View 1 (cartoon, one colour):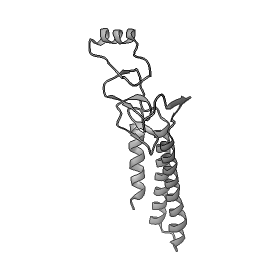
View 2: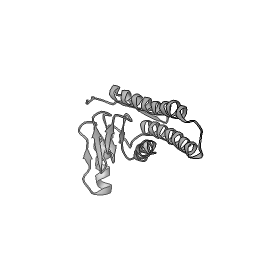
View 3: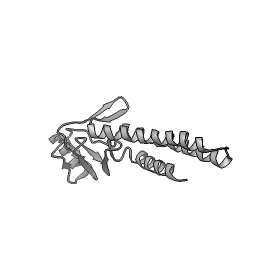
Length: 164
């Protein structure tokens, strides 16, 4: 769903996208991570008659990956994805960039910002994002230059939790 205006806030060091669908998906992600923890702790541990070293190592690895997945999810969600400042496409600024680089300067018609190479406009965030991959509702943020490494870690750690 496209929103007009700015749906992002940068409060101190935390980046937040104000999108009801994205926030709902993020909460569902947290609940799924916690449900996995609950199942492993209650169902699997209760079925063990004796604890072996192998089972203990598996349990430690699962909890470690769960913690890392949760922290990577939060970092992906709360990190600036590489948003381009809004409204910086003044005539003077564009002229100065053209004189410095002697190249074509592109301006986003939706958010009135100068678009660097490989920047794309996100209709959910209402901003242009450098090296934007996609807007992920599960992390309620765009995946871009600033948070792509945390997103890759989150998906890898979540996948690692499913291995046995």
